[in-house]
Length: 186
View 1 (cartoon, helix red, strand yellow):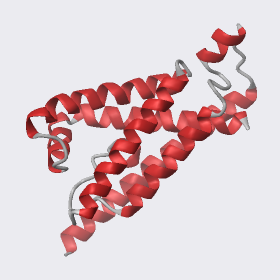
View 2: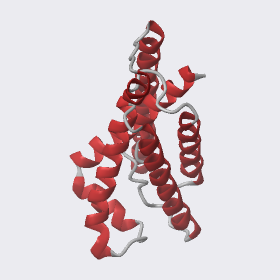
View 3: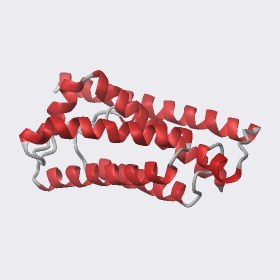
View 4: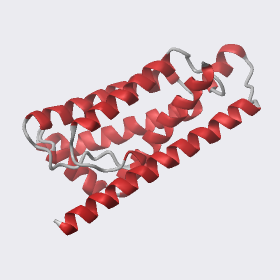
């Protein structure tokens, strides 16, 4: 089962990495989306936006390397929980025509309960990964055992996670494209 732990750890790493790169590449849009949620005071939104990016980058690096994995997973769960709460609050307010602001391979979608379920799935993956500590091919494991093995299985899992992440990104882009087409038609 460590194989699944590594696969899920890398998928979460690529998720956060693609998201943070997407947000950094268009900071103005990311800041606008944070403000559109109307959860935190306007005056704090810029600071929150930068803090969010730092935390996401920390998660991505931690999970990609398997370095301080428990911290990375805890931050991932905290961030995903906060995003899920913010989405749920806005859905409860009847505010669905807001971009989720996910970016990266998670895509950008209007708020929906599907996003809440998706985030809960990602939280579940993070909890599962946490059961295996640093797991295979992690710096944490090297510190604990003194050995760092990269077997064919680890390489296969790495490339599998890359493929799954790319499929998720492509799916997100297709969904965004469909949304744009529907918007133009209607």
